[in-house]
Image (cartoon, rainbow, N blue to C red; front, side, top):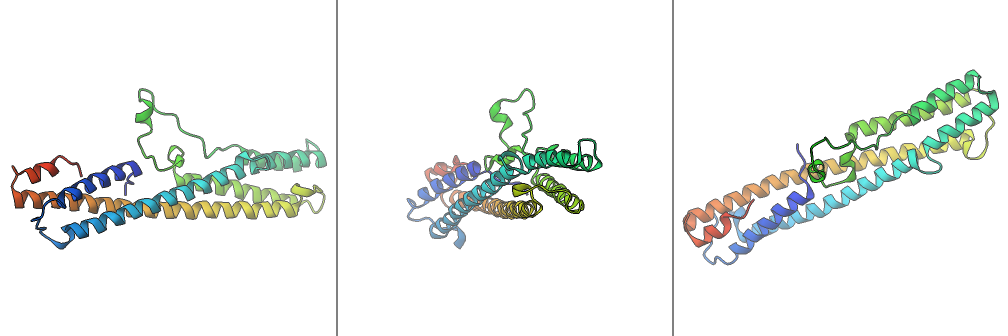
Length: 251
């Protein structure tokens, strides 16, 4: 189901409220069904507004989860990216640059550092800046690859890191780094990164659900407004001032 941007839904809701405001000035307005009464239309629009607020919260939660994970995996001074580089250097120091141990760790480190899930795709030539960004205004993640691809990428990075830790353990104590690069610290880091992945996954799932709910509500809102206009046309006539006031308001 196609999502509806906050801007689009906000505009449609604003137009619906204009129509509702006009209806309150028609003392003899006789809705053709209960759900088109002024009271029920207002209650429905209030529920749409509440859903918009909830969606804004979920968008922020997802954006925060993505930002935190991106920093932990690639940007912070102790990110997974930098940790992989430093582990490689430590293994080279311990076993020698030409050792099979260094070659194995280097190969896995390259796998971790060789992808950038947050890289933006350039706009196609011939489109203006506005045209290139019309897909959605919901979140910065809209300019990145699909969420499923992103989750897979971060999952693969963490899996490779776990492979590095398992390989270091297999050296039977000959890997002697301490502090942030000890086996214990690396295991703790893996757990923390896995938790970030889960939080981002959950935040994305909740965001997707509320976007779908919001799209459903938008469809229902548009239907009610169309039916309301039809009812006004039927009650007052196509040439009436009452209908003309509502006719031009987009739903």
